[in-house]
Length: 111
Image (tube, rainbow, N blue to C red; front, side, top):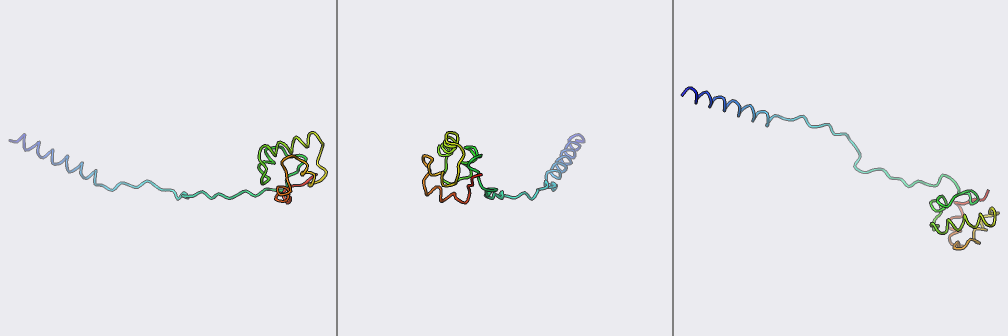
């Protein structure tokens, strides 16, 4: 009888300890106040693009309406005919029309 009482007391004690450990408040992990949304801003061109020195990826990235093919055509024209004398000479490049030139006139220069 003593043994069974002893075991019952030990069982009750262990049950209370385990319930206390489970029910004890746990320190919440520190949460940093990270922004939920990244601040994305559109990068404005830092300056004008020089038609005589810019490479095809730069022309493609900085000029509106100029994709990979037109950018390569501008570089090819420059390599075969020499440096651009004026911004209006860009109209002689195949695929570049007045609309594209007007849209980008404030973004390009000739040095």
